[in-house]
Length: 407
Image 1 (cartoon, helix red, strand yellow):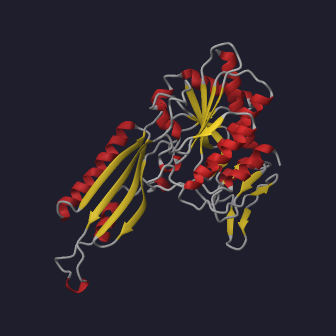
Image 2 (spheres, helix red, strand yellow; image 1 turned 90 degrees about the vertical axis):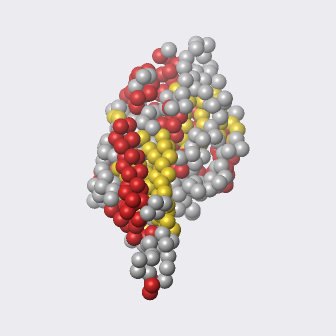
């Protein structure tokens, strides 16, 4: 087993699920555990790494050339999705995948099937790392972490020319807090790249505009035997509220640049009920309209059931980085050359989500996204291609060396 994969398997066995409603930062202590493991690994490799009180891992590799060239940064995140268990991850390696269905768990009948996941066709002949069908894998984004580490290790060992390289591994990306506490007095590249994408050989520099939507429905509970004219059932009102949203503007009914509303959490009862949803759209004007639409639904229900029945909170999370990235064509040009040097076709696609890079771009550091080699994120069907992971590492190395030569 090569060093990159050994490190990956070691890291995914640390459960680093983040927690949305946590009041601590990072949101879970296990992220600090992994942060310190990574710090020790980097120190053993000869890099000066440190972990902040908030769980960020920082390292700077000073330039080894006299020429002044742009400073570049690389990011990946420590946490895994809170949607699927990250406890007791038990990865398995399928050597030279032959294109058939993969039985992940005999006992539970969990199958990674070609019919359900046709993307598998692209990986016939690859060595795949899969789950045991009970947890996620953690390629999102521990694949990105190990690829960056391996790239800078090889840059150092081979004494390849490079400018200043900034590296940071962030906590809580999955709950939208990945750059909340980042130290920009330390992490200060001219531009950066996240290594956090699905799609073999895919480069991403446009993403959704995103907002978090919360409704609180205030009902009135009485004995059902005497409820006529008195009860106001928050559960039934929540059903009506969700029915007012367009049924074909959901994640399961959209693709590409199509935006959506996605209700993902509901809790409460007759007297009080809370709904959480996300709003997504690549187009900024359509994004604003979606937020107004959500507000108008609350207004409509308050007119129908009485003022104060439905309260609403909308919080912007991040914006489409495209309009800023396109002002810096050199970032795209370097990436294109790095992909081609690695023998990859330079493919771009919109992110139907966001990354730390989307927010960082609006903080003054343009930061598009590189594929990591993983697929089916946030699910028990998550898998990673070893060959794709090696190519991602190669792209990172190429970016570093090309910057040293191009400026």
